[in-house]
Amino acid sequence: MSPKLTFLLCLGIYRKPSLSALPSPVVTSGGFVTLQCISWQGFDRFILTKEGEHRPSWTLDSQRRHNGQFQALFPVGPVTPSYRWTFRCCGCYRYIHQQCSEPSDPVELLVPGVSGKPSLLSQQGSIMTFGRNLTLQCLSDVGYDRFALSKEGGHNLPQRLSERPQTGRSQADFLLGRVSLSHGGRYRCYGGHKFSSKWSTPSDPLDILVAGVLPDTPSLSVQPGPTVAVGENMTLLCQTRSQRDILFLSKEGTMVSPLRLRSKYQAQQYQAQFSMSPVTSAHGGTYRCYSSFSTSPYELSHPSDALELVVSGPSGDPTSPPTWPNLTSGGSEDRLSATESGQWKGVQGLKPYQNVLIGISVAFVLLLFLFVLLLIRHRQQGKCRTSAPAQLLMPRKRPSVRRRGADATVKNTQPEEGVELHPQAAASDAPQDVIYAQLNHLTLGRKTTPPSSQSEEPPAEPSVYSALAIH
Image (cartoon, rainbow, N blue to C red; front, side):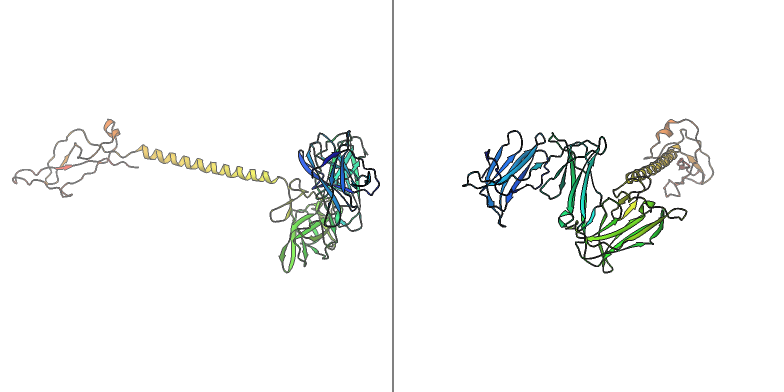
C-alpha cells in the first residue's frame, strides 16, 4: 500500500514508537532511504510526519513482524541537500478516534557536503574494555553550530550542539555511556550549521575495539631485546595458541588505531611479526597485543602482558620516548608504513615513489650510454669498410711480349669474360697502390696449341691481374 498524504496529529496517548533509517541515515545526494517506524504496541497504522513549514504526513497500515512487533516502512527520496529532511512517526488505532501514540524521537537524514571535514577522536584510545565510559569528540577549525555522529551499520544519527572553546574552533562531545559489545565499530562525524540543510565532508573513520570479548590471551616478545639502539632493526612477535586470523599491536598512551596483521600458523601457534626498522626514539614505550577474527574485527581477546621497549640514543643513553608515531603510510622518519610482507618499517629520507623515479632515471642513463657506445662502434666499422674497397683494376694498354722461355708472361689488358669492373676503379686515373697476382693458365689446366716447330717460340701464356685491397 502506498503512503497516503494526511495531516493527522500525534496526540500522545500511547507510548511512542521508534523511528530509524535503513540502511543508514547518511544518504548520498539523489539517493533513497527507507524509514522504519516500529512498536510493540499493536497499532493498526503508522503516521510519518516531515518537520518543516507545512508538516506533511503520510500514513501506512502496520505489518506484524515475526517477533511480534508492528512496523511500517516508508520509502523516502530522492534526497537532496537543498532541504532539511527531519522526520517523526507515531502509531494509531483505526477504530478509536484520535487514539495515537506520542511522536517518536526525530530522525534527520544527512547528505554529506564539501565543506571542511572535522576530526573525530577518543580520549581513552581506540581499544576499550567493558564498563569504561566512552566519549567521542568531534572538533573542527570551522565554526560549525552542530555535529552529527554516525556508525557504520547504525540506523540513528545522534546530534550535539557545538561548543566553542576558542575563537574559530568548534567541538562537541558524544557521551556513549559504559562500553558494551554494541559499542564496537567504525565511527565518523559531520559538521553543520543551525539553519542550513548542508553538512560537511565526513571525518576520517575512527575504529572502536572492545577488548576481553574472546577468551584467549596472546603473548608478546621482542627481538633482539627490550633495549635497542637508534637505527637498529626490531621485531615484535605476537603469538596465540587459539585459532585467530587477525593480530593487533597497540601502544599505550596514544589515540592512534593499533597495527593490524593477518596471522600465520607456525610452530603450533598463530603469530604475526611487527617489524620496525630502523628504530627511532618514537618507538619507545609500552606495547600490548590482541587477537581477533576478520569476520568480527571489533571484538578482541584479552591483552597480552605489557612489554616495555627502551630506545637508546647514539651515545648509549636512553632517550625519553615521545608519542606513538603516525601509523599511516609514508611521511617522515617517525612514521610507520605497511609493506606487502605485512611488516611496518620506518621511512627515512625519500618517499617510495621518489626512490622508484631515481631508479628509473639511473637505468635510463645507463641504457642511453650503452646505445651511444654501440652507435660509435657501428660508425667506425662502416668507415673501415668504405676506406679501401675491393677493386678489380685492369691495365688500359697491351704491354710488349718478353720471351723468357717457357715461363714467358703476357700482360693481358682485356678483362676476362664475366668480370665486372668496379665503377670507382674504371673512373679513377689517379695512381693507386696495387698488388698484382699472376695466374698461370697452364697450371690451371688450360689447353694451348702446341708449337709448329722447335725453332718457333712457345706461345705466351695469358695472365690476369687482380687488385688486392689490404685492410
